[in-house]
Length: 179
Image: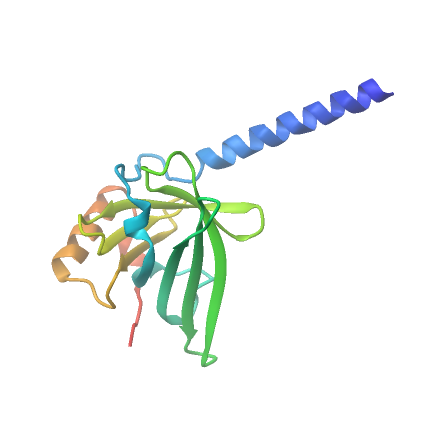
């Protein structure tokens, strides 16, 4: 009887490892590459959301920002905050991000709900780390981020061109009100 339980246990562990590997592979859309030469320390701090593909977590939010802070275990604390303009109150969620491959690749998994991680992929960033283009696990998630509450038109157009060339439906973007 113990042998059967051991075999079942090993099968479950193997199945769990296989599922974890599959989930990790699905954190970035096909044909999209995260930046390399990424510097985590330069990315930390506050970012303002300039535009996003709207989804239920951010529905009816304005003044959206994210703060990234280094954690002792090498992961990154994520605090997303936005003002719900329909209910006149601030909403905030705290999560954890960890690197999928290595810290020099802008490919992370972010979790706000326990052990479940979603893709967070930095696919473009300027040399000064002032503006970033980020996507999720598929082409239904896209964000334009800035260190300031605005983004220069030239940067915006460049990032929209990159996203469009990668197959993102940029006409679906919601432009975040920061005032």
